[in-house]
Amino acid sequence: MSKSPAFQFYAADFMIGIMGMSDEETGAYIKMLSTQWLHGSLPNCKKTIKKMINLRKVPSEIVMRKFAICDDGFLRNERMETVRQKQITYADTMKKNANSRWNKKKEADALAMPMHNESICKTDALHSSSSTSTSTTTSKTKNNKERAEALVLPFDSADFKLFWANWEQHRKETKKPITPTSRKQQFAKLAEMGERRAIEALKHSLAGGYAGIYEPASSKPTTTHHDRHANDPEGGVIDFEFAYTK
Image 1: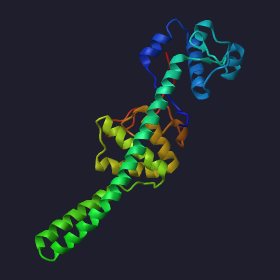
Image 2: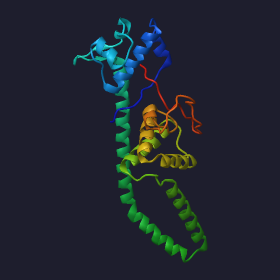
Image 3: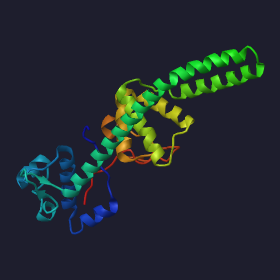
Image 4: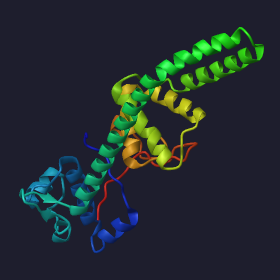
């Protein structure tokens, strides 16, 4: 999977983790965690770290103790890598589930085609002999058309279909299934973004476990750190995370 732009920030754990640190040390710690998240590791050299992340002075020992020397000689915070692996595992699982559902749907559609043709023939025969049957068939056709229109995706690419299927499944698993009205609104919102931003927004919202669709800060035309809570009729969360680990 592509690199995730953010990881979850647990305020209570973070406050415990920085006990004994000064404000300057806390700032250095956050910068080092963010750099590890983006680049995968930190160099095992205080002076290099100072220049790399533009610190006023080299990191103190209390900050350096938060990072262990790994077999490859680089520094890493253990919990940060645990969080990274959880995100990767979750994304891989969602992708596999979506592929499985997609394959099953194609098989079911192929098997249902002969039955669908037979149903049309029977409907035509009943239509000529019963006005009641005609009315019922017309009603069913209208309902089927409305359902089909509700499922017309704003983009037809395989990538978008995959992440939308993941999004639908995520909402079901969190006991917040998407209603037809909400689906229509979300399709309109994604269509306005354009396909690339729409896919990034779905990926970002899945990785964060959100109830609403939010774009990562890197994809937005403009970014603000104010008003982090959006009006989400289905229970949205913040659309920008700050870096953290224990």
